[in-house]
Length: 187
Ligand code: AMP
Image (cartoon, rainbow, N blue to C red):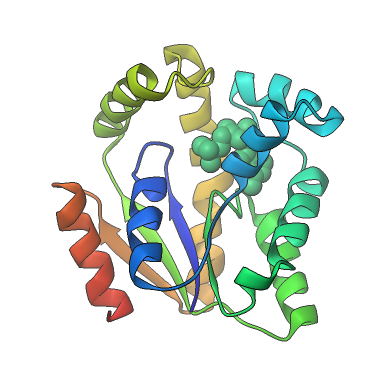
C-alpha cells in the first residue's frame, strides 16, 4: 500500500505513521527525519538545510526530492510506503507524480489529518519539551503554520482531483485517530 499523510505541523502525522507501519509491513518515510539525519551526520546538505529548517521555511524541492528518490529505491520500499512530510507544496506533488509514473506505480491513499490550529500549537509546545526540536519555538511554529496554509494545504486539492483523499478527524486520543485511519485502510 502506498500512502501519503497530509496535515499541519503537529497534527500527529509522525505518531500515526509509526502506528500504521506496525500493522502494515511498509516503511515510514519522513522527509523531516531524513533531513534531521543529514544534520546529525553533519553532511554539507544537512548544514545547508538546518538554516532553512530553523526558520520554519521549506528546504529546496531539489534537495528533498533527491533524498526521497534515494530512499524510495531501497529494498524495503518496493512493496509500499507511507510518506510523511512530503509533498509539501504542489510542485513537489507534481515531482512525485512524475517519479511514480517512471516507477510505474500509483498512490492508494492520501490521508488528511484535520486538527484545529489552537490544538496544533498546544501539541507542538508539548513536543518541544519532549524532543527539544530547534524548530519548535513559538515564532518558528507560527511561520511553519503559515507555510502550511499557503504552500502545503493546496496539496490536498491536488489529490482530491485524483479522488484519493480521505479526511481524518484528528481530535481525541492517539488511539481514536488511529482507529479512524484503520477503518479507511481496512486493516
Ligand atoms: P517535519 O519533520 O515534517 O515537520 O519537517 C521539519 C522541517 O523540515 C520543515 O519545517 C522543513 O523545513 C523541512 N522539510 C521537511 N519535509 C520537507 C519537504 N518535503 N520539503 C521542504 N522542506 C521540508
